[in-house]
Amino acid sequence: MDLFFSYLLYLILFSISLPIVFLITYRHKSSNPNLPPGTMGWPIIGETLEFALACQGGNPGRFLNDRMNKYSPQVFKTSLLEANMAVMCGASGNKFLFSNEDKLVVSWWQRSMKKILCFPSVFNETLTGDKFRPPTFLPEFLKPEALQHYLATMDSMASEHIELNWSPNREVLVFPLARKYSFALAFRLFMSIDDPEYVEMISHPFQILNEGFLSVPIDIPGTTFNRALKASKFIHNELLAIIRKRKMELEQKGDSATRDLLSHMLLASDENCDVKSEMEISTQVICLLFATHHTTSSVITFILKYLAEFPDVYSKVLKEQMEIAKSKGPEGFLKWDDIQKMKYTWNVANETMRLTPPVQGTFREAITDITYAGFTIPRGWKMHWNVNTTHRDPKYFPDPEKFNPSRFEGKGPQPFTFVLAFIHHVVTRFKWEKVDPCEKVAYNPSPIPSKGFPIRLQPLQNGSI
Image 1: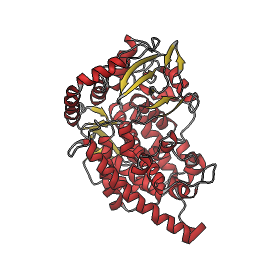
Image 2: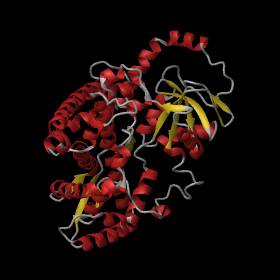
Image 3: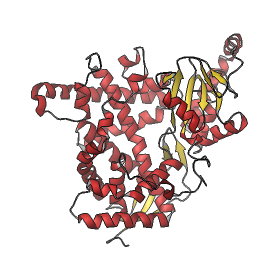
Image 4: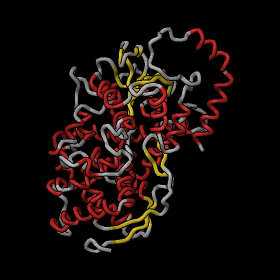
């Protein structure tokens, strides 16, 4: 409803300026006759409203599929987020963008998104994709060796979370609880902060920030965008205090100071031996936390949703997890070998992310004229890839609407250790059923169950009810 009224206000402002917009559009109409097929929609707002409504209706793929069927299955033009845009479709389009990063295209963030996530002084600089890229050493934190080091923390936090927030209750709301766990885990791993009251306090502004991420960029009191800007300012001030405290600790204690992602960010230098400013680090941390706040919790939530909908899949996951639980004993922590045994559970996680992806796609900007599929994409145009053009393609996934974890049989899990640790503790303690079988899902930008996905818990004893 808030989205509807935001766009209504946007349309009113647009209609007032329509005569001027028409003149400008008419005078500057593209002279390039070889653009991809498609429609640009309304001046300024383009097809943003149609795309947003498809997301709110729980089917972002509908917007894409309709245009792929009407114009081209390879690439079509549109106007989204106040930008001329070419939407790259299918695996070939994705491969083209990924293989030409920093050659033909660079990362692009819409101005309102940058304004919400950026520290103000960073926003006012000449922005490049580097400002929003994860730190270059972040992959080191996702390697198996690093994940093994963090596994005990992930396991103990998952167990404590379930004991405190799930076990005492007959019914729970999965999505907010999964978000609470993943956010607390991020603060512990990224910045060694384990104060639950502080994490809870800063979680609320992140929720406001997320709601404004794809809102209409009208900065007047009371709008979603205005609230998101205020929340961003509050979060940045909190992060700056944490950053300055850690800098002081590193200066005073040297090698004995806390070593985590934040410390690495403060000590790391680029090829010119320059370190990032406090504001740049604050911006990168907020981007990492923003990603954690909804993507991880979304994956956990929808794994549990599919397990509730497919009892046969749940039974296989339960069997696998109970064998692991019995081998480690009631007081033992999960070990790396245990995670590697969760092969079927990992298949379920992959199939969940295929059908309900936590990230829909990202944007690029053409830094030169590009020829693709026989069409020209002019320099300065934005380009979008979206997982929905491949995840439900029968060419790659036969019977694509069917939930079938066996299609991902193969190599075992590595990067989603924290998700698997959480699922282990839920599955070995409960069976559950959905309270509302007809609950709807909206995308903003990650999939969010409209009621938080309430479930009714049935405690297990030794793997049985």
